[in-house]
Length: 415
Ligand code: LLP
Image (tube, rainbow, N blue to C red; front, side, top):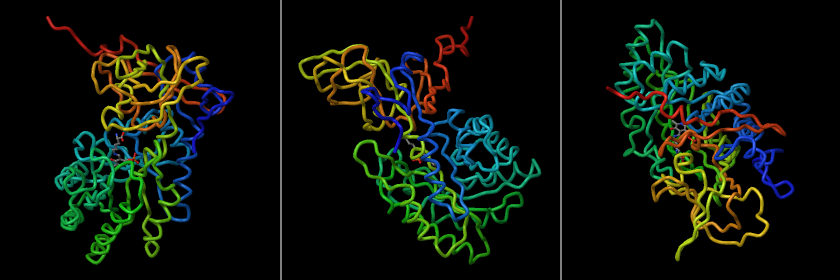
């Protein structure tokens, strides 16, 4: 459930009409609902109540400081994949002791900084990362808490670009090799083996792949225990999907119940790393129709947002709902491709959508809170758009629209 609804014929974020936001902050513009974000985070936290657990929000889904700060204030942990994300969490008031660090290519400086601030756990994905981490921890005179990210070789049944738990993917350490790497880690003086981790993909709409991965991990955990390597936590990754169109993903409580069922006779702390399921349906991309044009085959609505603002349709051919902010009084219903101004045929936000619209009308692209702004770019020298957080009847600008000057502020002309 989210808080984007029509009130008096105008689409609102909580109690603020999107038309008022467009007027005040311009378009294109991302608009988030605080109540939705908080509700979704709590749905995960409540689902694991009664068991030691930590919800580590996946920062990559949306890394705006205001959003991270709201989650930090609720007690959230964070899953990061770069030092940039770590600094964002710290700047937003997040607790480093609740941060887990995932990713296949952690650089020396990134490991060092994370050790300095004392993060909760390193999710190690490459055998030689263990040696690098052990050496740096030794230099700093600290002990690094580690989990191995195991690749359980299960099919997440999702888009191939966002499936990560198959042996052919670059992620994690092969489940057959994990035992040997755990033994190595346990013998390293500056590493403390604390957990195990897996993340099999994103936008999963069924529970079974999560359970298959868990079953494989539990076999490994038992073997480790028999060899004297006792783990404290299981990090089950993120990946729970959301409804974009007609998908029916499990609710957080269904997902948690199924997992906890399997874990009944264990006492491990459970970590999860949801991103999309917390913020995806908590945001829309607000855009204005610039022109309408038709040829013999098609009608195009050319809008002021583009693939640089929201790349998911172009990159994954993903479908996101597009709604008029207000019904146009006299426009005819037509089937449109909604396209942006970028010079690529792949620059579309939606295809074949029936809408009654006129130039100047506002459209809201739904389910844009996750992997929307965080994947945006300056392609075609387009400044990145503004971000607004609505809280009840108030709208807060949480990121200013980039200026043209900012576009090339770091560039220099040579002699
Ligand atoms: N943990 C790890 C280690 C991850 O790699 C990811 C996402 C997550 C957690 C969070 O997954 P979520 O709960 O959001 O599904 N750009 C793509 C999604 C890429 C996901 C990458 N990893 C998209 O727009 O669909």
